Length: 372
Length: 225
Ligand code: HEM
Ligand code: HEM
Ligand code: SF4
Image 1 (spheres, rainbow over the protein chains, first blue to last red):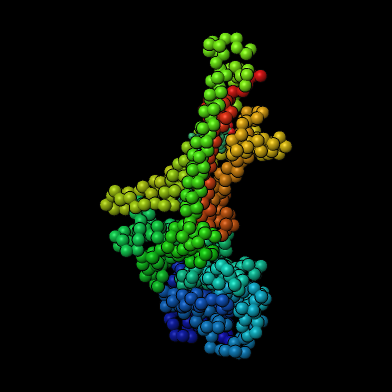
Image 2 (cartoon, each protein chain N blue to C red):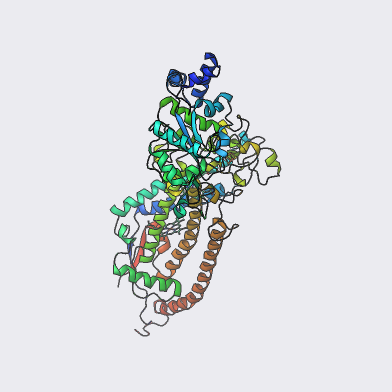
């Protein structure tokens, strides 16, 4: 296992200059949203604090979170994982295998109790005693509980770990459960399928620098990155306000880059930083590429379908039926009912009116003194 | 049938001014909310400028929705307040059937409305028990629509009122779900209005005591005998 060096020490060992180190520090600071006033703090953390050991668990997932992470835009930032964090256990990237690997995890947990960061990728199946995901003979839920017990911080990477994602979609056969529903300690949710690489590194950087978890919103997500909707930062927003919409994928409006609201864009209901940081070294993000947002960082986004329509299907009525279809049917039924009622009422009314006229005859003076 | 010479009627002041004002402000804002809400959910592309910055109609529709929403909300609060301080026809207990009499009246009204039987005996001068209960349900839907509406609004506004509702979003499972529910309940209002307006006219006829105009002038009429 790697000795517990500081980031500065590791960089020196790799032959980086002080200047490169400082550049790295300022980049990391900017990424984590730390202003120049906080820079000395970043420097101190990276220079003096030993690198926190990291255990990165993989449960029911597709590894897209890891794939995203290693594609952080800045080359040095990408190195955070491999070099500057002490990644003690991660199934997909570690060299060790089998007993050796498990031993490595045990050691970290013992030696750095209360100090290591636990990163969890993937959801945890709870159905049938959690047998749907086992590693080294232990179920995912047991591994999670055991490793989380002495972790300094727990980060749930991606939608799987923070809201169940596709494994948790109806009918959720494995009982896929997000991390925060299992652990009692605070969990940093970094949803997205996958989350944005820069956001992931920034969250880790924040913990490195401040030694505590970033400010979270009511759903456990770092406020810095999840407090605004994609819609509020989308560059197509002016066309939304102007009422200029793409009506079909191949129309003129699509070519002009109008708003994808009517094509089912989930930007208005999705909290993420895509439109700000963008993806692949800031190249683009779904809407910029002409495809609506799928809302991949939102709870249950797989069940909020169909993706290419604004309204969801009405539960129990097949995919083509929306609340508007049902509403129209009920509305028309009400109108028809009321009309039919009005017709029968008016037929009966004639008899009543006739009676009333008859009865009011005495008033008119024609049959004075009749029955009375 | 013999002695139904013209009965003499007495005027009764049923709906005080705040109730009437509430009713029409409510009717107008709800209508605007339905129309603008429907457009927000199902917009069509309307082009009248050359560039996006030259037009803002969709933003205006949303603005109208939000302005009406605020008026609707405070108007609703006024009505709740009036349910405690208003006259006996406006009091809250008209809306909740806690008494046996109210249940009996409901059965009677159902017969009159659906089976179209002749009205026997007298029904309440204010809201009849069934109408009261239905209005109570609509009040709950008003509340629901305000809660979901302000919950959505909390992410686009930093003013304190909407922020009071942001707990709703995680509770309902995200903004998408909130929006779907909010959209769905628009149809409740549409169906309510169709039936409500019709029933007002129908009861005007079967009761013959000025139901429709009562919401304008405040008076209903009751037989003296
Ligand atoms: C009678 C009451 C109301 C009706 C019928 C109504 C109807 C609707 C409908 C149909 C939508 C479109 C949903 C969609 O995207 O499919 C909508 C959107 C919305 N409504 Fe309402 N609404 C009502 C009251 C309110 C209230 C009280 C508020 C409180 C602020 C509110 C705030 C909103 C917001 C924020 C949106 C989303 C607008 C956007 O896309 O930016 N609504 N409403
Ligand atoms: C032209 C349309 C309308 C007419 C003529 C009308 C008429 C009336 C009348 C006469 C009453 C009193 C009924 C009674 O004696 O029990 C009433 C009550 C009521 N109406 Fe309407 N109405 C109209 C539209 C609406 C609309 C659009 C709404 C909104 C959804 C609405 C909501 C209510 C409510 C909530 C009450 C109970 C009033 C209370 O707070 O005591 N009405 N309406
Ligand atoms: S494309 Fe999507 S996110 Fe962008 S403005 Fe339109 S609805 Fe909003």
